[in-house]
Each structure stands twice: as C-alpha cells, then as structure tokens.
Image 1 (cartoon, rainbow, N blue to C red):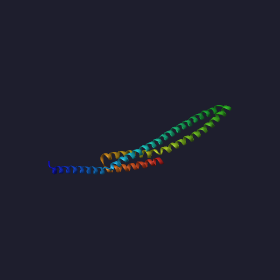
Image 2: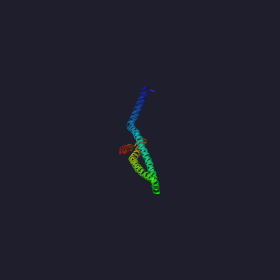
Image 3: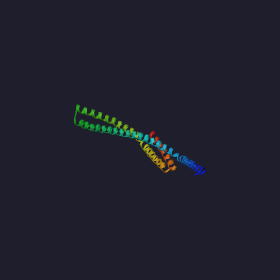
Image 4: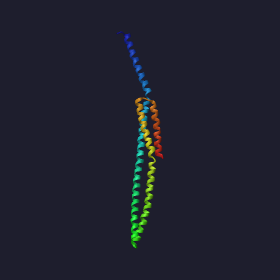
Amino acid sequence: MSDSTRDLEIQELIRSIGEERRAAKEKERRESWTRYVSLMVVVLAVATGIGSLKAGGFSTKVMLFQTRASDEWAYYQSKSIKQRIAEMEARQSSGAPAAAAEADVSRYKKDQIDSQARAKDLEAQRDGFAKHGPDMGFGIALLQIAIALASVCLLTKRRWLWAASGVLGILGVVYLIHGYLI
C-alpha cells in the first residue's frame, strides 16, 4: 500500500471520527433538555412527598378531634341518662333523698351543658382541619399526574408532554399551598 493511500485512509478515518463526534455533540445538545425534565421530576416528587406528609397530618388531626368529640358526646349522653334517673328518684322520694336527687339533676344538667360546649368546640376544630383536605388531595393528584407525564416525556422525547407536566405541576403546587394556608 502506498503512502498516499495510507494518508487518504487516515484522513478519511479522522474525518469520520470528527463527524461522529459532531453528531454525538449535536444529539446531546438537542436532548440536553431531558436533564431539566429529570430535575423537574425530582422537584415534583419532593413537593408530592411534602404535600402528602402535611395532608396526612391534617387527616390525623381530623380523626383525633372526631374521636374526642364522639367521646364528649358519649359523656353528654351518659349525663343525660343519669339526669333522667335522678329525676325519677326525685319524683319517687320525698324529703332529704328528693333534695339530693334534685341537686344531682342540676349537676347533671350543668355537666351536659359543659360537655355539649366541649363537643361542639372539638367538632369546630375538626372541621377546621378537614377544610385543608380537598385542595391538598387535588394538588397531590395533580403532582402525581405531572410526574407520570414527565416520565412519559423522557421516554418519548415529546416536549409538549414536558410542557403539560410543568403546567400540571405548577397547578398541583398552587393547590397544595392553598390547601395548606386556608
């Protein structure tokens, strides 16, 4: 093989290597946006996790205050039953036992009024925590859909899916913040 042929082959090899490198750089430049999609998926996942944690906290408080209110209403009902029994004793007896039964009736009525006020206060607190749930739940759902769209975007290389994912992600975060602050 002559030197000129070998030189041509070397030049051709260098040219093809250069073209491959340029093509690889061009492909990397065209697909560099996928790094941003991946970063967005991480941010959306973190927002979803934080939102789920906060929503779970509100849900736990709703259940706690519902349970406490139910306990208070049960106490109210027990005082009502005791009051009725004391009223029956007062009607059937006379003298000191009747006076004691009348005092019991008054005490049970006062206990009922106090218990009713506590139960209504607990229910109001429960309702205050419950109002956070719908918006936070909707926000979490939007964030999960945004994560799914962004994942499909990475597979299909469709930029419009990235845009849709971004819009849903922003809406999800807005709902989370609104649900937390109301």
